[in-house]
Image (cartoon, rainbow, N blue to C red; front, side):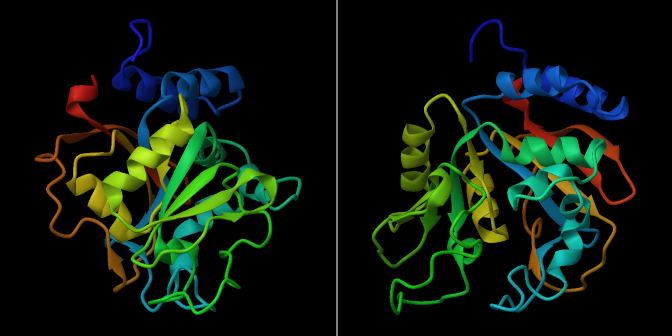
Length: 253
């Protein structure tokens, strides 16, 4: 990082300070985002109180698993979420600022296959093109981890899905090349985030801890020793719909 770039602790302090004061100053948020360019981030990742990042039994009818939508109530009402679907309005404040930060400033995305669709095994055909319709919300090169090769899919709005069959490191190398000076977002799901964490490849994480008990689903933290992996809590702030927790690697200071 450049010598005049604030360290991660300073970035978190600025973001969280903006949160506490209502996020009215967009310049503060932009300063934080600009300082965080070129990093690998998990952002806007919702987790239940009992540690599940998705519900069980993902299907075409339940893309986030059974009751998985409940994890994202903090996000669905925000101005950022509404704008993703061409709608106006939406809430502002703490949740909106974290929502905005979770989608902005990324030059590339990495997704697990389940984040692309419910199809398992070999691709039966080329008809499935993602959960989001013709104009996905990424607007950047998006690399999908899979064991089954497929030709890239160019979508409206700048998203191109690339299918990577040679593992998480290869996907990250391609995403970094595509992102240039932009951040790379590890977009999920749970298994993909866990793999990148265990490999020590994530610089920064933002978890939105939702006041929901799922009971079962995809466990985010089971078997992960985050302090041993070099992470610590840099700050947190709460709303009625989520407690936002920011983690950073100790060597990022």
